[in-house]
Amino acid sequence: MKLKKLWLAAITLMLAFIKTTAHAENMKSMGSMDIHYMAIGATFLTPKVALAYGIQRSKYNALINISVLDNTKEGKPAKSVGISGTAQNLTGQFKRLDFEEVREGNAIYYLAQINYRDKEKIKFEIDITDGKERHTLQFNQTFYVD
Image (cartoon, rainbow, N blue to C red; front, side, top):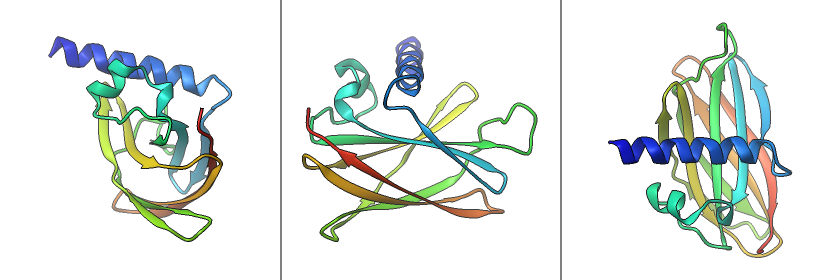
């Protein structure tokens, strides 16, 4: 149990670091939800963190991170949601995103992985519901092999 808490702390620090770098997160308000999202190359994760979360660390693999906050409540607490999505490249190939929920104290993250090629532009379409509202988050990301 202590090891799991240590890894949760490590990924929290990693996510906080990423939010303050050039790969900053994005946010869209939709109804009662503030949806924070980012897509980064998996090589930004340390090998230990990637292993702890079952993330394939490769220069051809990206990590999609979504978190949803309830903007109707004071302090905007994390909101548990149903989430699914797809990714489509410019040649029309679809890939299903399989999100896994990660709970870390009061924080909730939804993580998915996707493979890409160098300079590949991917359009993401992610459906998010809390049982009362349903929203579709759309964004594009170009990935580069480092």
